[in-house]
Length: 192
Image (tube, rainbow, N blue to C red; front, side):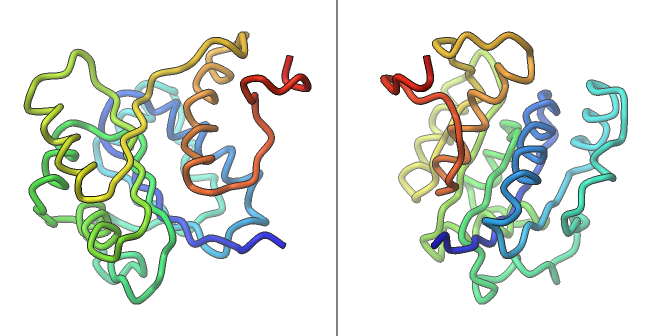
C-alpha cells in the first residue's frame, strides 16, 4: 500500500520552465500517490514559462495554486504536515534567500518550514557557471537538511527528445521525493 504524499511545488524564476512543465506532467500521472499538491509560482516563473514554452498551460493543471504572498496556504505552516517541497527550477537569488532564512514570500516561508520541521526539501538549481556564493549557499541548505538535485540531465538512457532528457532529472527528483515510478534504472536489464 502506497502512503499518499502531501507535496508543495515552488516554481522559481530561473530559466528552465520545461523542468517545471515535466514535473507537473509527471505529478499528474502520479496523482493517485498524492493526498495534496500545492503549487506556487513566482512572477518571473510565469514570465519564463510564457516566454520559453510560448504558452500559459500552467493554468490548465488541476492542482491547488497559491499566490506568492498567500501565507494562508497550508504548506506555510508545519502543522499542515506536507511531506516534501520541490523547488524547480530554483534561481540563485531564491536559493540565497532560503540559505539566509529570509522568508519574505510563500516559497521562502515554505522552504523554511520544511527545514525547521526536518522534512524533505528538494532544490533543483538551474544556473551555470556557479560562483563561490552559489556553492556556499548550496552547502548551507544541504547542511540544514535540503537536497540539491541540479538540473543536469543524464544520457545513459539515450533520451531522444528534449522532454525525455529533462525527465532524467525530474525522475531523480521524484525518486528523492519517495514516489513509486517507472523510469530508467542503471543496471536493470528491463531498462536496456
